[in-house]
Image (tube, rainbow over all chains, first blue to last red; front, side, top):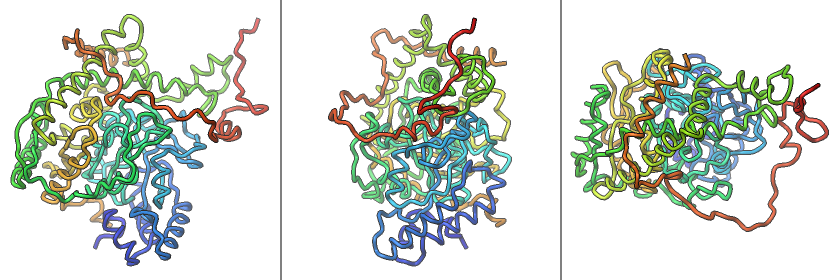
Length: 490
Length: 72
């Protein structure tokens, strides 16, 4: 029988509301699962057991008194360690922030906390969210619960693995080029990247500000909708946030796909896609057709340039954002410097890992005089073309589908010496970030080795309702019945 | 190693130059918003102590850094 920590948030919400269970029991169930598997997975950088137990006790009192703050009240969550939490260490999996304790809460966490969420801890990730395998963490890799020799994907690898292993009910991640959807795909969970700006970025430690998006990792599509209903909304502290106050994204979720126009992205089923992934996506599309969707093919003509544009735009913005780590106001400071300039150089040299350094160098190069027009300027034009491609596609289609990732989880160490091979993991997820459109990864089967495959749905800007409705219908029809083998041995 | 890697990445990135885009305007933000302003009224903000709480070194309520001028 499944433990409480294996249930979805939606199921737990009902049981909590009826008094059948308490937040204490759910929280203890997660903590005991963490105790059983965490030494093999490495999903967490910081555990907050004591405050979690206090928050669970408060929640239990509220629910007993019939004063639940929201459907989330009492349900445990984990946060990617790039979202600030007042008084709780926030590292971005970097040496440079190893002992940083933020004096403020991210808006995403503030909203969850006010809704009654119980914080279990902060999850492992690629340093500053730069990576696709979680191997760039300064504090060690995360292992995929489906195969402990495989990566969980990244950069929200800890969040995805923790949800897959039942260490938490759900988690937040962030998605700049696929960092929620790709690990969700590789770990067999649901990963939602909403429209850029739908969830405030305040307190999301910046990587590439024009692309960064807070997202959710859950074990069901209705769970993603539940979290989004609490998280979405305008924030005076983020000038790019949208007004979405009080929207219930679970409303109409079971509307099905009858008559929905589904466009299969032609470029995403070509070379470089593993045959198992291609087959799973094709049969997923057939299921959508069986469910009444009107399926056709669509081209995103400039998608082949999206990866190149992304690896100019994101490092450019990163090189500017990461200039704040100077050893003066917060974070690590290198000792024994002869003066301030020397101190800053030594601090960054010792504080940043290799991938972060690579991207800072790429970014400063792409922005430098003489190269700006050919690299950064041209990349921003590709971005315009990508937006136009989507606009054209959404004239004929309501949602687009493609694989989330060209492959399933690869072995730890397999791609660490080849940055370009690593970057190619994001080839199907990056276009949505460039255009700001929402996208979600839903499990659609297992490959020959028993590793999960994800199907990505994409909708137009602020088209979350249609996106979630399509994803929910698909999930109901193609539910993954297998569980990570690790859990069978417990 | 870094030199070779950056060379390869830039080679791939240069692909963006293949797109003829003379008449295409650049996009900085996919969903542009303009003039997002609030009323110009002071609001409570982070305290002095909180702002200094993560400083590697502080003195007299200020951030302290190694010397910034050359010594003779």
